[in-house]
Image (cartoon, rainbow, N blue to C red; front, side, top):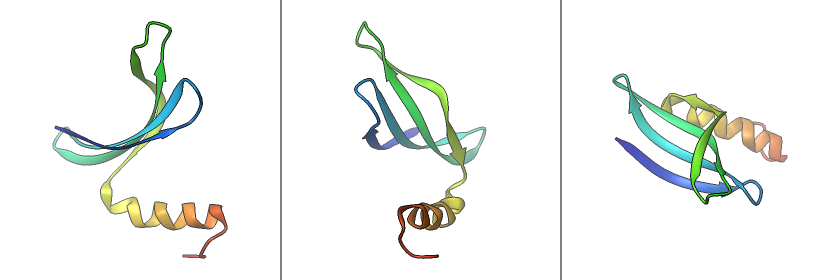
Length: 72
């Protein structure tokens, strides 16, 4: 089972997809780059990151710091 959560444009041919799914019995979250080929088909690349949902608060905090927001 895979829950598609968001798609963020990266360039004219690439997007970052956020998905939640189960892999080998564990719930994971993926941020993966997807590429649109000349034939119009969109497929995942090897570029991305996978983590457990309990890491989300730390990741959000780090992204806010990178944006110039709070220090977490």
